[in-house]
Picture 1 (cartoon, rainbow, N blue to C red):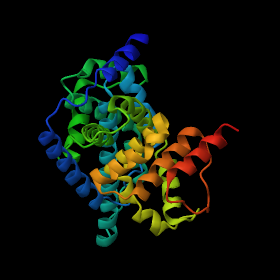
Picture 2: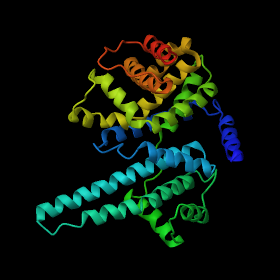
Picture 3: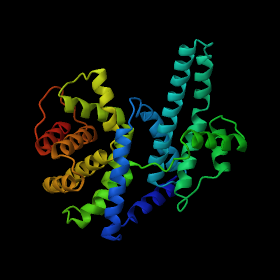
Length: 328
């Protein structure tokens, strides 16, 4: 088990910034911003409901066991999220149609059991599909997948495995090359490097990966903290929660929050400069960046999120208070 870990760490240390022309970076950043805008506008109320801690942890551990790079694990989570949302939408559509046409209802219990029984197969298929998108690194073979499933007590054939991949692809209209928060983080770090950020991008990168893992694993608690802070209410209404769904799909906001929190951990004296750079690059307000980075820091240092306390305009005093309380 030690070799995969060393290999993974080596791949992180080989990551290089400053090797791409500024024109290319500008075009790539604009493309990501446009993708992000479409994702935010198209966010539905059920988005994020399958980024559950146990599911994300399973994907992360499986990706590590198979020595996949970090981008693959995030991509797999996003593919699985969108696939399961599609499945839920299809079920709701069928139920609505049957009620409207007064046709004989399906056996929903049997349908639920079918989805449950195939969930691990679908999850593994999402990881395998994500690995194929990064074919320059490593592709997981069908034999490896089948052996893994068999070790868990699931016996499948190669045909069933291929059918599972095809089901995921068809459900998502073969659009599986989905953007991940890591792409936004690394692009913003690249721009920060060109803008003369005082904290080196390579130094921030490793911390950003750790915090991004944390946000994925604690997705609901982190965003619940952010929601409560944004409305200054410890008990958000259902309508407020539904409207907040678009924030959960805003990867640009997540990217700046991750970098700002990482900058505070690495060198809090340079935090203000980093946040100002991020605001200038993305147009996201300083207050929004501060709120998100504080929510991340709160969960990473172990402090309790304030309830109805008013939110100061700057993060530094609050983060220092959080760090102090975590040491008491």
